[in-house]
Image (cartoon, rainbow, N blue to C red):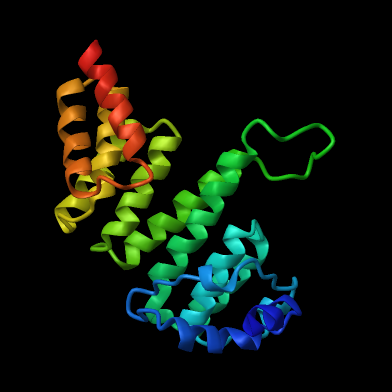
Length: 224
């Protein structure tokens, strides 16, 4: 846990050693910090280190999980400059942060916080980031899925369906897009289509965190 102690003290240069020890897949930028336990990065340090794109991506996502949204955005912004080849990943990351902030902000804004951005503001920014992601990487199935998910959250169901279907067209292994279509068709009361896509999702990803919801919806439609 020596690395955890260093990180807790604000020494983000230790991230490089975390990178080496966890042996992430740089091409997919997949990371896991579970070995470190609960560590903290001081505000402001993200402006200086680390310098690698993969490390910045890891740091940004960790800050996101710690609800350090502004710091996460700073890290994603630096990642864009350091490694423009991963621009789509950075845009997707920032969009995820803003979408989460938007969902969390709905219904929580009070008259005592007149300058606090609204949930709609964050959602619009998330949409803008994902549209930019698709503009530069039109064949990025994840961007299409995330855009569909955000549109669905905003109640723009038909537009969401278009994005989910495009994600599957690009990548037939975009199983979450089947889940998204299942939810969208359920909302439209198109039960047959909903059942098809929810079953397709469960067939390929039965242990997903969304599998419980998928099974509950299938049970409701079966009983109706």
